[in-house]
Image (tube, rainbow, N blue to C red; front, side, top):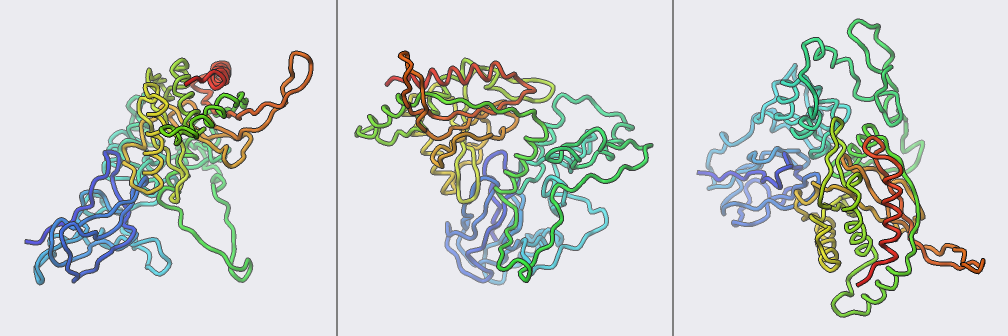
Length: 448
């Protein structure tokens, strides 16, 4: 009997993976453990290995397909074996990659979406809705297509619907009917839906809101050489999350700077040390943030609309620039780690993100985020919240700053820039300002 090759599950939050490319084709002979294809989630890439030795009898999804986990993507067995029963339904098998030489998928009239005939549907904010999410949304009267998805390629998954339901009371049939009048994108800043954009069933239809992306025309003849890049994978996920963050939170940024002489001296000391040479300025800042944040529960928190959740421990996310886009791995219980442990964990997670081998579960559950653009010489910037987190701290370049001395003279002292963005729905400027003041003191007083 032929052996099924399943799309593996990579972490509890992953519902599907995209097949980047096949390393084998039908008719090839493979050994057990041999790489068959390379796939990616919204967070990492990995290889799918052959579960048994034999001949590849069927490859059921082409490169570019977005396939739910635990679906059969190929079959291995003896030449001549019948694998027709293992093939997915015809509609799922027709899932095509996003390339210009593939015919567009034919639209069926009101198709029933099931696991066996999965079909990505287009929506204003995501690249589809998972079957479980669609079922839950329908039962609760939620328009799933209007939600910002956190699944692969921005797909709306079950946890997105649950998040939307947080704190909501059941809807009456009339309320459910009015749900259809709410547009996916509004006429406000960043596509925010304003009161004027919402139509009641009895009202005269209002003009459609301006599209989020302007219509433009371009061609090689007009513009010269150009390159089109499909927005998918991590890039699409980041775009969806950033837009959702700006639409659903009241973000305010404040800037300051801190005396950097202590951390510069510590970095120089560690650089000359045999066992601590790998500790960086970023590690020192992460350590200072974790130690300071425990005293500011207003910022070490989630904003969930109807409630605020404050955390006793710091689960510190930090932004990592990777070839696939921005990733934010999380250092668990960062407030309980030593500087050496913090440095080791940040390097381990950062390397895994860059290689594309990071565990998807390591990219969720943060309570506060740090993003560092100091190496790029950025003096100040406005970080965007990693919602539902209440705060994010931007680390800027170390630059000389004139400071007045007691005798009236001026001394140039190196300062590191700090930019905090916080959700004004959850906290106010005074607590955020006190946090920045505490960070300035902590960075000046660090001792090892």
